[in-house]
Image (cartoon, rainbow, N blue to C red; front, side, top):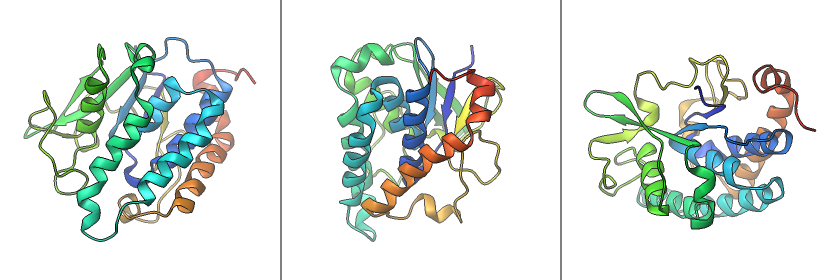
Length: 232
């Protein structure tokens, strides 16, 4: 069964997808729906499955503050992975694990074959979730400096591979993320690829979060074609 939503890779633009997740949470019920994520899409995916609509704004402010606190220059490489883990640990607590089991699908890329690998739990511990999500965002010497997580030897960022779990292949799935092709259902176009890795201030990230919510509203017709009429 195809996932209901696919959060594509975002780099440092993940607050955009978090804003989209807030709109989706406000306007639809999620029941046993599955959400597929890759790379930086992990944070909005977990948020969609675990937060109430009222919790999104405070979460966006906390995550924006975490990423804005990192140093610039090459020192940023040494901190991005750790800060990403801090943001994940803010969301992934033992009490939310039941909401992730059987519902959160995480994609990595196996090297040297450059093929996708899918993880779907059972997510009995926080560390299992964190490990899968970090492996899905692992770009050596760019976003993480540490060795691969246990069970993820020779796996890197899931946005780098090819295979059946591309997300765009399912007509029923709402695809969210920055785009250069416009193939996503809710998207915006960065000026260039560098924008996905450059440091962003706290206010730039909050602006992205608000943009994501607005874009979801503007793209509501595309969302309704796949998810049906909203509950409100």
